[in-house]
Image 1 (cartoon, each protein chain N blue to C red):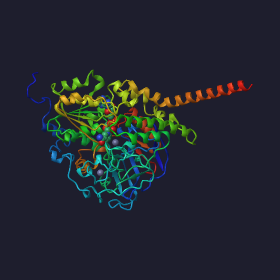
Image 2: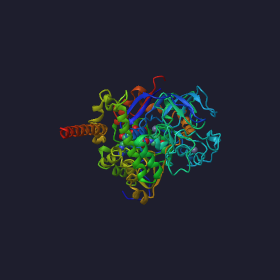
Image 3: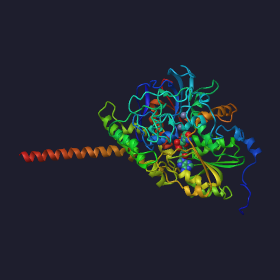
Image 4: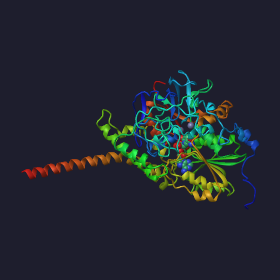
Length: 382
Length: 198
Ligand SMILES: NC(=O)c1ccc[n+]([C@@H]2O[C@H](COP(=O)([O-])OP(=O)(O)OC[C@H]3O[C@@H](n4cnc5c(N)ncnc54)[C@H](O)[C@@H]3O)[C@@H](O)[C@H]2O)c1
Ligand SMILES: [Zn+2]
Ligand SMILES: [Zn+2]
């Protein structure tokens, strides 16, 4: 089969790879009909996540058709069209029965701090991902769901990560009616977080980024006020000024490990891999939120230490809420919101790229060219 | 403006927001938010799991694991098993240091760089050698408006994007220099041997 393969930092190619096999009785094999590239893939692509092996196929956001099931699979059958959450999880461990699907203890030998994620380095379990014609889906009775008839496939792809993660990020903020919510990052996750903040009753939503075309999307799609941090000397002062010098009630970090805005922080982490991530946006969040406020962190960071301003968080009495999103927990309510017309997830898709040209997709999304917000990848057989 | 007990003053009323923004307040009640409370009380069956513990996947090759795990978890990925020098470095990191130790992660990062080097060298002897030009996607710069996307739009990341080609090219440059030095060294030894035999 054809599959995207990692060849080292900034380098990927499409090559012929063996079709995945059933390796566990509850595995399914899915023929991918659409996949997406995510901001998280960029951390791998740039070589920032430890134990990312040459030869791995990335891709944790995909939908497709079941073509084979293992002997113990009961809930799926060949021919089902499924959406697959980016989390691999067992459903039965200490964490899974508490709904902490992204923190499953039974699927990742390589790290106890991280759950299982498709195509996300060995630090997330060493599974191949879905930027390929076929993918192994472990624990098929637990993660995937059949795509509802009324739901468009492009919307379903965004339900495997970006939309649930943004929605989850807003929930971690514990937003109360009238709260001022600041979202750092106007990528897919930040845009959905901003949009979701209104559902939870926010009184103001302010999105911060440096890419003008994404801020424009934040204004039309997420109805947000926007701030371009390159136009300011100090974005934290602006956040204080606009909140009567108190700070925002809730701040969401939807940027993660490759934050810009401080050359030294960015270069030591994204280029030289000496930090688990550049905590520029996280530090801005800690300093922009009001005392007693909540910082929600859905931006992803690697397992190496980062230079976080923890003293400010401590002295301000902040609540810091974090996690990889437990995707399937969000689905029933999100499907209701989509049906009610509150979200049209595919509104943020800007590009469709054939799998054969995925190299171009990575470069464009990484360098933020051509006003790219969310690229979808389509295998030729799809 | 004095610092009194009033909340922030600048926000619009809830009625105005409900009118302007589709879905405003739909999840106002925390009970409607699927991630509240953080922890639920589910059964495995609720999650589709018809097991207490998933069946054990056969371990066809010895599988490295974090020493913070009491045993090998029952389900795991099998992509790219440990091989070569990078495999030895990674195995050492897994067997000797917990996730709490910087040495664990820094060794894994080293393993990644060695892995890329090993694989680049191997590819040179294959029918499909690595090609740093096509594999980085830079050829799409023209079609994807590389210049217009980057300049005159006030972006912060152009300050460091110039480093990317340097990072990509560095292993090739280092390899080329290394091969050059080896060749020179070999020539010198050969000529000095010739001198001695003469
Ligand atoms: N928690 C989860 O489950 C989960 C799931 C998906 C993605 N993520 C993470 O969320 C983050 C965002 O993902 P995405 O797909 O939207 O990525 P993206 O790369 O498209 O978006 C990141 C945005 O942040 C902006 N940015 C950079 N530095 C900034 C700063 N200092 N302040 C404000 N904005 C800044 C960038 O210009 C970009 O628009 C990534 O770190 C990703 O790994 C987490
Ligand atoms: Zn993702
Ligand atoms: Zn589990």
